[in-house]
Image (cartoon, rainbow, N blue to C red; front, top):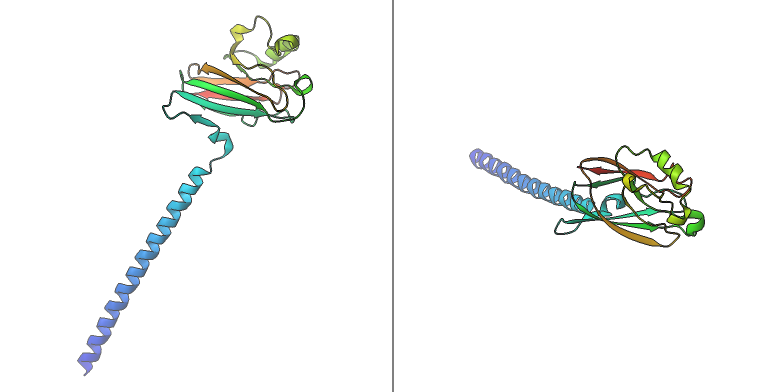
Length: 184
């Protein structure tokens, strides 16, 4: 009888251990599945600053949307591209004020161009969307001036590797409305 009880106790222990391992495995699998679902959810909810810079499916055109509002700030201060990549950039004025009082443009300057000097020259270029005459050698690409609720789109090719400054040249804006295009 003692052997039967001992045998039953050992069998119960094996059964309990097997069940506990099976539960642990299914708990681990459920936890891993939940972690995978959470990671996938996080990946689809990337910040707007990053999701606005999306290369097309064929990787030939990088589409960028950058917004500037009545607060005199670009919504993105760092843009990323690859040297030689085609870029389609849309500037959206997300504010309400007209371009005569709160216009915005996007000017990508070449390396070595002093942004403060460029902005000073731009003050005299009101009739040309604050793009100074004769500054073509300082600029890689630029948009025209837009006011509240307006947008404009340009296309250009990313320059060689490096960090390039972009600004809004409307009077007084370049101090706050600027950023870097990082080209790798």
